[in-house]
Image (cartoon, rainbow, N blue to C red):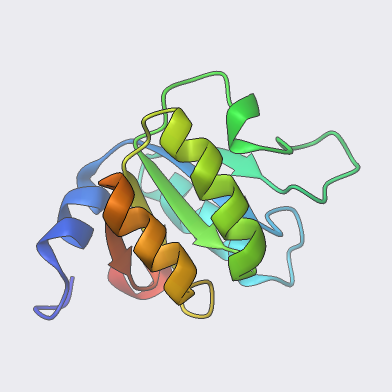
Length: 126
């Protein structure tokens, strides 16, 4: 891990149960690489794609049947924001926001909701 990485980010990378929200089944997309990297590191990874029609992953963070420690957002910020509103209701209070998935609205929501944020890339930092 880089020395510039936030302590929040370092703490998140120690945790075991992750939900990756994005185009997680598409091998050509970074989301599937993030899933693979987390799984290689021994994490339990729940794949979430609100646009999925295959039935091979969850459509919403609310559908994940287990406690989630950290959400990795690798999806457009509007969809990510919707999922984080649901996450807040589930008391999930850590989010790792991949480059391009952030928005001021999302960051402000996390701040007022007490959700710890790390903006970075699992592929580079894990």
